[in-house]
Length: 109
Length: 206
Image (cartoon, rainbow over all chains, first blue to last red; front, side, top):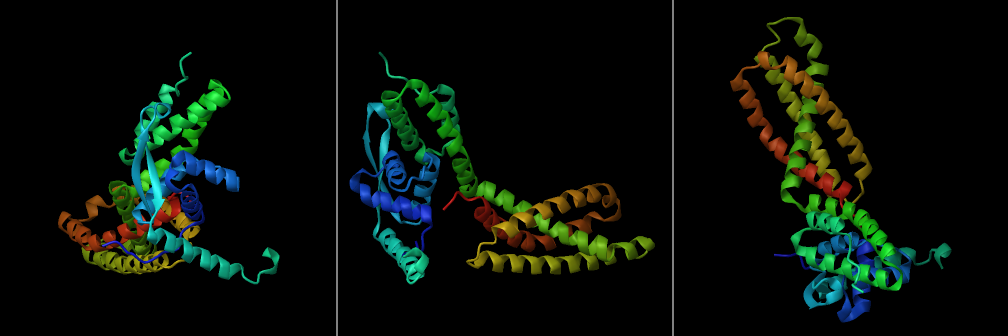
């Protein structure tokens, strides 16, 4: 049985999860990569995005479904991702920890 | 005018390194981005981007495949376990007892070896227990583990050479088998420690 307790996520995992939430039902590799780059300036390879997505899926923090296949993708389908309830709880856990850590640190105010 | 296509050789390399579960999605994503760059900039830039993206992603994908593959994890872990055992045999047998044992042929016998190897097994169990504690803790010990792995590898090579040229004629087959059986639980523990160590040191950035 999979552990259904929320767990802390790494910083890149957090970025990917946030990008998925922002993109709603259009969250797939290219869009996630673009969203992260536009909002953080951090350029991530598709390899890094997909390895992270695979890890998140194994932890049951995201779920996936197949989208449409287009000609510009060489007839290949998109895999669309969404954040699960456990994923959302894990994000809140990590965000809460970060907020408590920086709370009162003057240099970061 | 026909739409430019990604370099075939790169596509072939991608199809080799990508696991089936994500191959189609990732190749589709890359082809989509390639088409976007080719349309908005130029085919040459798109091709350059494609090769660059392949190189950037290769490390992440390969290490991920290596880490998530049970076979490679088990092989690496077993190697780490054996390396750890040989290191401690080397220390106990050659450094601690070596000079005394080399003195006369009578003490350089099977009983002495069993004592020496037995004590080395105790050392290794301590090492594995310590490793397990380190790996279970939440602190990041990756640097320490990289250094330990390099040291162990060095000792393994040195001791293997010694073992191959100096030991075979001094030990009976039965004793060798007994010692091998003794090592099994330690190898398994070492295997687990090695696998955890590897996944911590070389897993893609989190």
